[in-house]
Amino acid sequence: MMKNKICLVTGANTGIGLATAIALCMKGARVIVASRSKEKAMGTMEAIREELPHAELDYALADLSSQKQIREMAAVLKNTYSNLDVLINNAGAWFSEFGLTEDGIERQWAINHLAPFLLTQQLLPLLSQAEDPRIITVSSDSHFHGKIHFDDVNLSQNYHGLRAYAQSKLANVLFTREFERRKTVPKLSSYAVQPGLVKTDIGLKHTLSLHGLAWKIRRLGGKSPEKGAETSVYLASSEEVRGISGGYWDKCKQKKPSNNAASSSDAARLWELSKEMCGIDTYFEG
Ligand SMILES: NC(=O)c1ccc[n+]([C@@H]2O[C@H](COP(=O)([O-])OP(=O)(O)OC[C@H]3O[C@@H](n4cnc5c(N)ncnc54)[C@H](OP(=O)(O)O)[C@@H]3O)[C@@H](O)[C@H]2O)c1
Image (cartoon, rainbow, N blue to C red; front, side):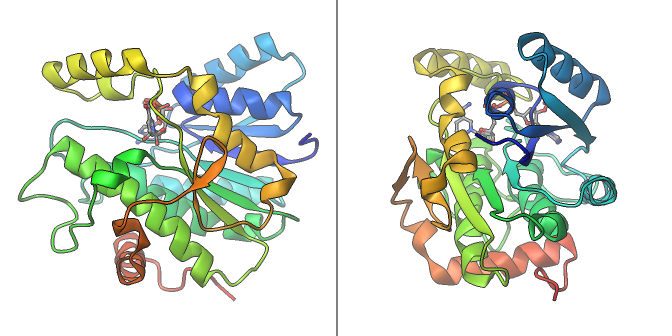
């Protein structure tokens, strides 16, 4: 059970994130629904309470494509809470077409990789106050097709949605592993997750019609969001994974990630690049 545990789930208003939030509430946790819209967050809390009237819920707001909004959301959370037990970096996006955020960063790189990197760093003071803090970052087996294009992470010269998505999901695995290597607070645990192919609308939201059709066909073979949430919920709640940190998980078991995800030099290089892109001098203060 997770009574008295506080969990923040990004992208909790729909898909795998919503299923994760509901499962954590069922275990008795207090869940902070992170969303980019107050309306969506309130609607989500209402929907969860219809199913679970005693669910302990709160919400936090940020468009994760904006580093300013990530910092503002973290500041609000630090003013409100004294600790955070579980951070689930679940929010993610797919874009068929190239585009830059307000920070001048390619959108999938910003939302899928830099947002978890920065949000985790901003919430370290709260996580460090928990007894057994866990950071779960939702990656994907798409990372097996990825490489980090260090000379042009924005892919401004050769953008393709799949290339950008795979790169960002590889970065999730490298981040998780490098976090484990560099952390200065031993009790902090990090986990990267493959949820499997899940029937959600991720491939329909910012998508050319041909890509949308391909996603509709592909997801027919997918699992439910509830099933897709299982590994994240397991890693958030299970006693047996305490301290088994830095790895890649699928179906509630550790799995060997891609060869590119096993490169120590890429992990270190990505860490420095991500710090620079987020304007962070020292990731682990103190
Ligand atoms: N579905 C799959 O088969 C699959 C497979 C492997 C990995 N994944 C990963 O699973 C995670 C969840 O995806 P999903 O399939 O559940 O997709 P989804 O239903 O589209 O949910 C994605 C969530 O992320 C939020 N989000 C996207 N961009 C955001 C932004 N700029 N700021 C704040 N929130 C933002 C969305 O909010 P809005 O509702 O406001 O858009 C939504 O709540 C992602 O990291 C994805 O890469 C999915």
